[in-house]
Length: 489
Image (cartoon, rainbow, N blue to C red; front, side, top):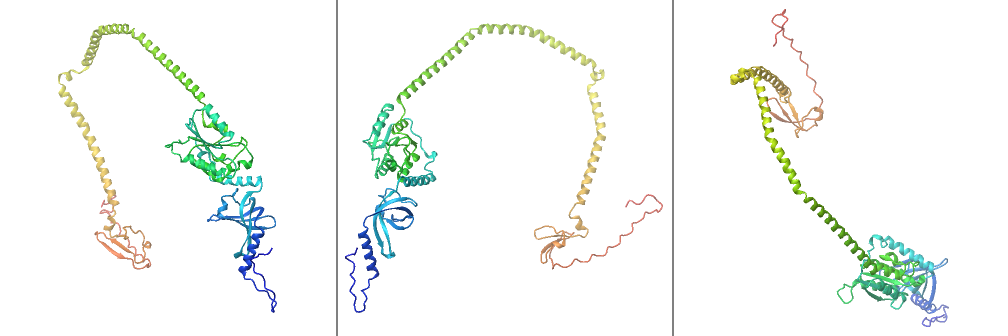
């Protein structure tokens, strides 16, 4: 196929050469040729090198076991794709073949994309589930509790199917409350976006307008194939369900059907009818429960009244014996008071006899001159205590003298009076050895006359020779050589 706009080569001249193309002319001629020849193609292959650019475009590569072709999805077409482009996903795409003149390569501009079979869809779903689970959207701790007695129930489903009739009929039989239906399509490419918009719309209600805010939401759909239920595996819809502030029940498909929103919803119902039962209590059961509790309250109150009545009657019977108890107490008092006088007289007589017996043993001298006897006893005590006090004072004096000698022997100033000196560092620490001093170090020297001089150590030096030890003077002998007792001093 030739392009009409392509330049026609000139006939051979005398030189035998055709007119040369420019690089741009050849590149764009090939681009138009590819677009005209392959304006619509349908390819099947595995996605690789998928890049979601910040400007919204998606760049990727389609490959099989023997070849690969680059592809691009423009931003306007990304939102219309039935699957999200991911690494390793097998897809079927439609588009047109074009060339990229600046790079001398061809590529396919993708307009539609769908998964190549159920296996590819399920593989993509498992990868999405793993990613959302890693983000914590499936955690039980973030699920909300359903209200026990809702006043308003919001239902998101198709208004024409049997699902809404089953839900309304079940709620009407169980619990008389208001039901608000948000009509959506539950199959096809637009289903996920409409259901997500309905959830956001219910959450946006503040309850102040004509339409009240629901206490619980139900997203419902009947059974179907995997392709029919696939909109409820949409990632954006799953995130919207997870962000809902209103508790949400997922009732999509039959009991064996499982979609992605079942994992992020607050409760999953096997059928739409079961969702209506989860959302509402049974009024008749509540009435029976209230009646039973009322009966138990009346029976319990009756038992309390009977118990109090029995106690009052027992107290009444006891009060009738009070006069008898008082008379018995009066009789015991009269008997005790009658014995009191005789007992006091007997007690006084006993103490009188004891006093006489003790008085008879006292000496006549003590009875005649008690003061003189006491004085003699005091003088005797003083005579006995005087030697003891003297001995006590002597022992204390000896102990005090010993402590005084000990204090003098440990006085740090006493060695200075015998010609010694105390050397201290600049920080006040006492120097115990000359080797510990460094050359040029400043020290303080204190003498016995309490005069302190400052000095500087002159070099390391060598230890000075020890002065000769003077012979000890002979001990003076006593005055009398033959006397066995020497001079004490």
